Amino acid sequence: MNNRDKFWHFFDDSAHSPQENMEIDINLLANSANLAGLPLLRFYDWDRPSISIGYVQKEDAVKNSEGYTIVKRPTGGGIVYHDRDFTYSVIVPAHHWITELDRVESYRVFHKAVVRALDTFGLQCTLVEKKQPKSDRATMQCFITPTKYDVLCNNLQPGRVVKVAGSAQRCTKNGILHQGSISLEPIKKEKAQLRKELKHAFEKEFCIQFKDFMSSLK
Image (cartoon, rainbow, N blue to C red):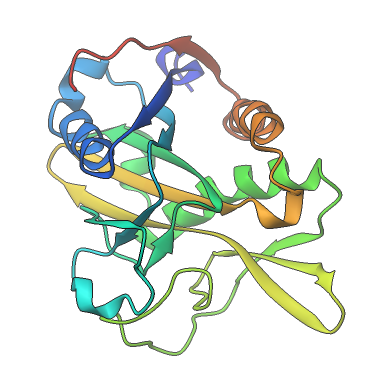
């Protein structure tokens, strides 16, 4: 590990409209050359009840959208309701060691940090280790349909294993955009504490320190 690998950017963002949130992530990926080779972790919120859908999905896949604004993500994955989750994104510039991983393996390294954070709330979380049966990507819902390396919890409901975190990615010549969602229900909606624990978990999992990032890319 060289000295550069010891640092990441941290972007503690505020609430934005659904479209603005997606545009910020797209712009960060497109301009990742300005990150000096360092990944960026972004925390952000939504200024209204929102639903995001994967880039292969259509709005009519959402069956209960009354009162919500729907936005298409630049990444894949399924339908996510953003009035009940915590969202983050990671931008990894081209040529960083994470971009050299197998794409599915990169999900594992990010979700290990999520598991570490959720463990501090007393949850018994694990990663989906086996490849899951193919689902209908056009209609899938994120927290109903687990895929490999999603985060599961086995001590929420007797006899049931529940998906509590998932993500989707977009890979381009500029690097990786990883968009993640963590359910707030298992932690009784303690969003402020989750922000703290997730940031700390990334520091521990990747053996890094964060530099505060101020965006001019909105």
